[in-house]
Length: 100
Image (cartoon, rainbow, N blue to C red; front, side, top):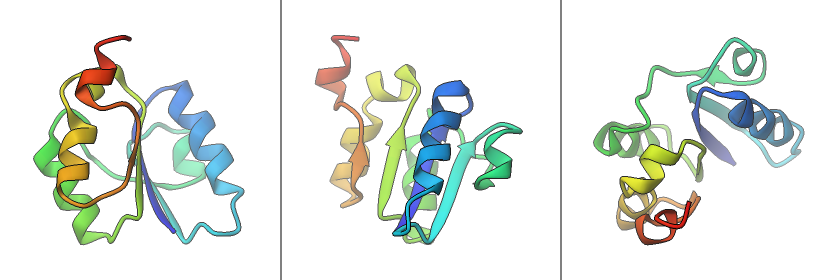
């Protein structure tokens, strides 16, 4: 699987660390990531708040799953946009993110 983890904090580092242990993982990307994720994945200069950029990158890299960490992109509907583009995403939709 090709996986993209969005965010740059400790939560995203922990998620990337665990995903990096999977034997099913082909490529792991973190956008934008941090120095810790750079040891586990390819950090890419993505803005998680820019859904057009994220969808474009996911299509170009044939991403199988996007894990969205930060609250702002979730509340902005990033998961909805990814799903509408046919890209699997882990995280609540815009309506669900309102609870957080």
